[in-house]
Length: 367
Image 1: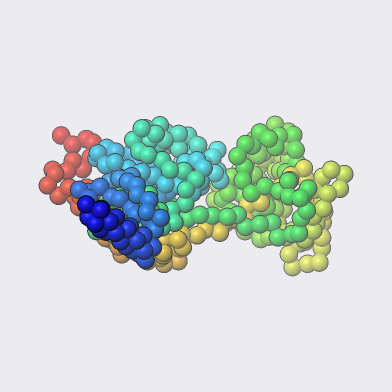
Image 2: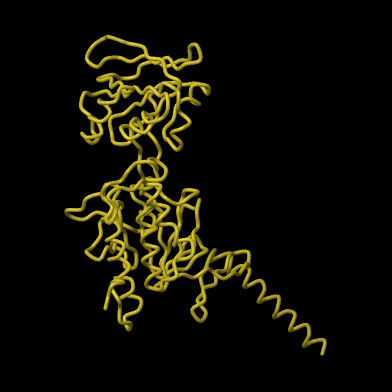
């Protein structure tokens, strides 16, 4: 009996050592048992991965609409976003801007649009916010996301990608930095102040117009060229306002605080002439550096920060799709409304791929 017990202990010890060193050797392995995914790590920890039919990367307006449409077709969906709240660039950069090219709305602010899209989404999908997706692996017809999620299909809806503002090109101390802003979340915080707005694109023009509507504000719109990149209608509106002064072509050359105001030296382009303006605060609208490079790690082909897709919105990797401004194909234009249509195309394609036996209802008005 003792001999048998010793043999059993020896066998158990050998099995234990084999498992220990085997797991250390493979590092990380995925096992599929009855369609339930379990991951084993080198420490011997085992846990079940959360399972979904679809992962949407990006919770901007197109991603939110996509989640709604996926729910309409019965897809269990998880939505990831690197930001701490949904809405993407529209909600962060221009929440008060009136958008004029969304189907069924003659005019809707970015904030209102996100609220309408988000109302149903809270119950229709699982949201993982403040979570940039880092790792994505395709294993046995499924995608493993950050070692925690298993999905059957992926839709990338990141727009222009993660973005950081182009900084004001002058050396500034902490006290000055507090008065320099790259976003306008609450225009009322600027009332009864003189504000300098730097830039010539739509964001700068929209911010200038919104701040001009606040009580007691005086706005200086400063651009290095006489021509603006933004809409001509926005420029003409600003020029017609009595509390807005358009200053071109000027480039900021110096900044300091004097008498509790920002004193900024502006050099007239093509001359040596420098004028000085005083502001309570300034808004910098020089644009943003966008980045979608992370998808390269997943094997997705990227062309000039955009993903080339087929007519079904599929990328070069079967099962991964791209919609909205992150996608590109001949003739595409960067419109939110177009992204909504692309979401419908991608979801319809996914449904046909995952459930070929089903009779698919393409639209909610089917008879």
